[in-house]
Image 1 (spheres, helix red, strand yellow):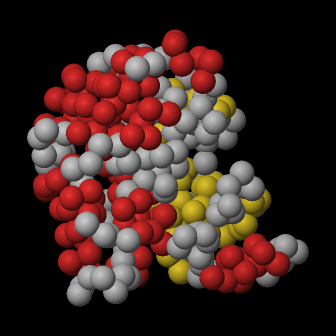
Image 2 (cartoon, rainbow, N blue to C red; image 1 turned 120 degrees about the vertical axis):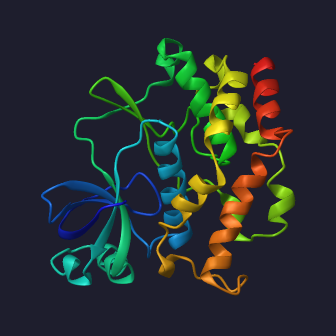
Amino acid sequence: MIRRVTATRYVTPLREGGSLPAIVEADDDGLYVVKFRGAGQGPKVLVAELICGELARALGLPIPELVFIDIDPALGRNEPDREIQDLLSASAGLNLAVDFLPGALAFDPVATRTLDRRLASLIVWFDAFITNVDRTPRNTNLLWWHRQLFLIDHGASLYMHYTWQDYQQRARNPFSQIRDHVLLPIATELETADRELTSRITPELLWNIVANVPEEWLVDHRFPSVEAHRAAYVEYLGLRLTAPRAFVQEAIDARERL
């Protein structure tokens, strides 16, 4: 189960990206990085963040806790920045947040060669599976915290859901962007990672994860119902696991070309 908290204090914006996430304090006294429903590309970013983050957790990959967070538009009434006021107003209601890791350090690509090769292979396989375009040397979306590596920011994944065009066919496509993955050079155990992770992703697991997505985030005229929308996510991810998995071979070939 994903916990639900209520925002009590807007602390500070994080201006690294265009969606303007922010550090917010909640009623459990915790600090969270909030991904706002009213920002950028809307709730689809939150859907990808939730599905991919919880799938990674289920597979044993290190992910900070994800929580649902309720935002009251009055939270920004004392905020002088009009852009932030508008964002909080547009995001009233249920949003997604990730546990803030104080003092965490961004992963330095120079340190790649010191990382465990099995873990690197699992992460590369996972990112190829979810079509994550955002784990490159320029923006690793990896953090060191208490000597452990954590994966963050999966909102750019599952980009097929912006159109859903030919998604059954696209599910079987390779993922050429894996060539830019920051950990690809040391992902020497991709075949092993493929066997291990494929066996653990069951239809039941996918349904359990997708069932967590709030109904109000699944508004798309292409589907006759919310349940049909959920089923499309499960179908897409299930089809990506169907052998032969082109995304795995693409990753192996891309590594050999380095």
